[in-house]
Length: 287
Image (cartoon, rainbow, N blue to C red; front, side, top):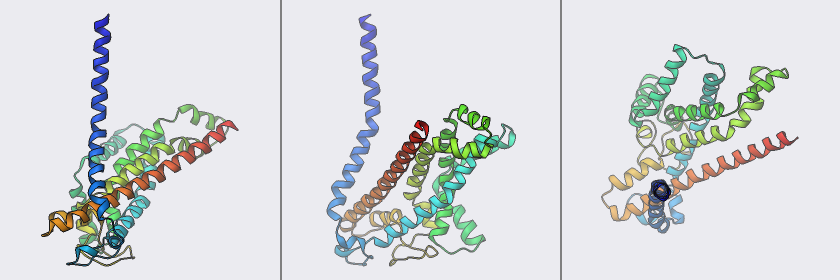
């Protein structure tokens, strides 16, 4: 009997250690970025780049360009991803057509990001003759984030009990009213999580924006229809394309830190929206 409980404790400790490994690596990565990035955070870093002067080198255009791309990516991908998930969960029948759609979603989720970059370059820039811009980058990255959003939204919708739908239909609501007023409010937490996961991946991609948006140096570009700098490509340039790595590496860590802050801020916004939706839903249930 004692041996059985001893083995159980050993297994539990092994599982704890395995679960702690990702946290250790996360703390290591974040700690390294903070250690090297914070000293490089100066007011001048929010300005435009000054070639040849690393003391006053700024990445402000890259920050603005990345924010543009993230915002438009979310605008394009989130509604389409949620509507596709609603169709697959609530309306579509299990037939050959829907199985092909699900297989295509899984295939898209496994493709390397550089394939999306090549596709965006050929389709948007060569075939459609669009200029390099934040809009084209967002359209390209939307294709990359859609599988994540669709899959997460499907799981969130499936987690809502069928009784919610049946109760709404029983009192005379249409199928869409039942989905809109009862299913979506209960699934908003998972949908927002999927949206932020997809957006976080898009925000850190280098290959797609290299083909359709990013340039090495530019001033502040306020139009979403023109090319500009972007944080992932700027980090790549500061680390792998620099001849003075001792000067550019701190700037690269500062850029990593700013990108990390943007992603964390987006997650905080998503948590706030989820919490607000849950509180509103609880008030409705109580009343």
